[in-house]
Length: 194
Image (cartoon, rainbow, N blue to C red; front, top):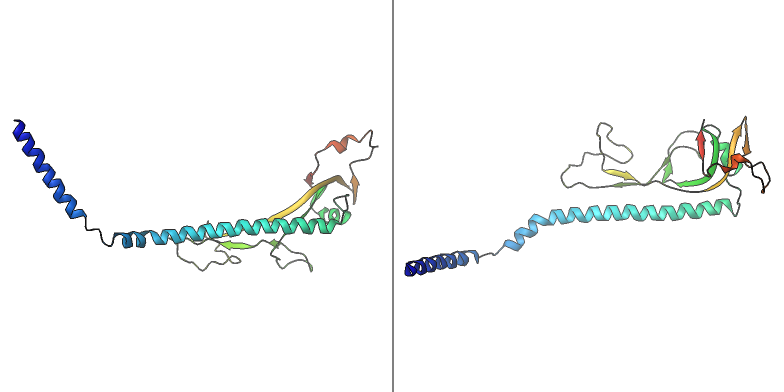
């Protein structure tokens, strides 16, 4: 019996050796793998590039908005200014923040220099979806998704709280520094709509 077991084991070893000699011919496998994975690698590269570019633009927008904000206030510590507060009259009855935002451009509408701000736009390419002719400024409204993203940026600081009383903005702080008015204990940076 042990001789038969040895003979069977030898036959299996010979069969295994024959199979391994058939697998040795792997020429062209690297090119095949390259052809399969290259579109995926290109797609991943474009996604990483677009995301990195969007983040970089956001960081630079934040720097520009912050610098422009401090340029506009020119060392004035009494914020928000009355000009800002007058702009809030149509929508807010309480305000305590001064801010500036970054826009690529202003949409037409309203008087000169006014309009809805439009943020910069970035397109994310898809590996499987076809180009449907959609543009950032002219999206396909029937679709529930888009391949575009807009990066919005705003910068501001909290200031004194003001309340709209009639047609005038009145400071919440009406007492002396040693005994402040209880209204001044409200949260800074508050904005309350009408």
